[in-house]
Length: 409
Image (cartoon, one colour):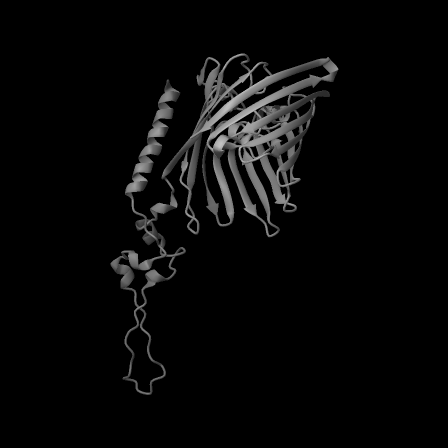
C-alpha cells in the first residue's frame, strides 16, 4: 500500500508541475528590452573625456553604458540578477502522454517473457509521461524528464531484478498473480553543450531487441536478449557526435538491471560507438565492464551490423559476448543472431530470425518466421509468428505458435 501511495504522490507532483509551467510565463534573457533591470544596474556609468579637443573646457556628454547589456558574471547578467530573473524555460515541465496495449497468445512456454501458454495475456499496458519536445531552432538548454510504467505479464520480468529484494519495483508487492507492475524508466535528460545525457533509471543501450513491444519485429524474444544483456541501468549515460559523424556513448551505472539500489557493490562503466559506415550500412558497438552487480565482475559487449540490402530488404547481424565471475550464470555467453526483414508495402512486412546462443558450453538454437501487419499505417499492429527451438546436446526440439496485437495511443 505504501508504494501505491508513493506512486500516486509522484503522479500528483508531475501534474502540479505541469500546471505550474503553463501558468508561468518564460523570460528570454537574449531580449534585453523585455527585462526589468534593477535601479543599481542602470546607475553604473562610464564617463569618457574627449582627449582630441584642444580646449580643456570642451567635453563630450557623459556616455552611459548599461552594464546589463554586457557580461558581469555569467553569460548574460550577473549571478544575483540571473537568480532574481531566473528563466523558467530551463525546465521543460509540460507533460506528454503516450503508450500502448499489447495482448498476446502462445501455445508453448519458452521462459523468455512468454510464460503463460494457452491463454490470452495482457503482456504490456504501457504508459509514458515525458516532457514535450523542444521546438527546432531553440538553442536554449532545456532539462526534460521521462517516466515509463508497465502492467501485465511482462511486468515482473521488466522489474529491476538486479536490486536486492524489496527495493524499487523488485519483489516489493508490485505483483498481482501472473501480472505485475514495473517502472523501468525514470530519468532526467538534457544537453550540456554538445553532450546529451540521461540521469536516473533508463533502458540499456546494449543489444538490438528491447523490452518495449512496438520496437521489436517479433512477438517472442531471442535467447541472447533475455539472458546475455541487461534490461535497465541506474546511473548516467551520455552521448556526443564526433567530427567523423560517429556517436560516442559513455556512462556509468550501479550494475545490470539496477533500480536506484545497488546489489553486490555494482559499479560498472558503459561505453560504445555507433557510425554509419555507408549510406546502407550502420555499425554499433556497446559494452559494459567492471562490477556488473548480480552478474559479478566482468565484461560484455554487443555488436550490431544493420544493412539495407535493397530498398525493401534489410539484414541485421548481432553478436554478443559476456564473461563474468557470476556463480549464478557460470561460463561465457556467446550469441549470434541473424534477422532478415522484407517490406512488401507500407502495411505488411515479413521477417525471419535465426539464432545460435551458447551458455556454459551448451548450444541452443532457434528459428522464427513472422509477419508485421499494420493496416492503414495506423496505430494497430498484428505480429503472428512460428518459432522452433532445439538443443542438440539434449535431443530437444519444440515448435510454438504465437501472436499479439498492439494498439498504440
